[in-house]
Image (cartoon, rainbow, N blue to C red; front, side):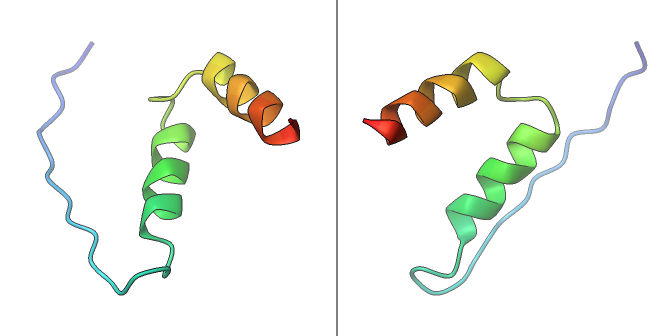
Length: 47
């Protein structure tokens, strides 16, 4: 596997402007969050 460069990102913005949602979606899309975790949260949300 090729060595990947390190990248630091900073998300700034006002309260309730979707920073956490954006970061969470980015992590999910990149495969950093497993499908079993997403399934767990969906179940919790239903309850």
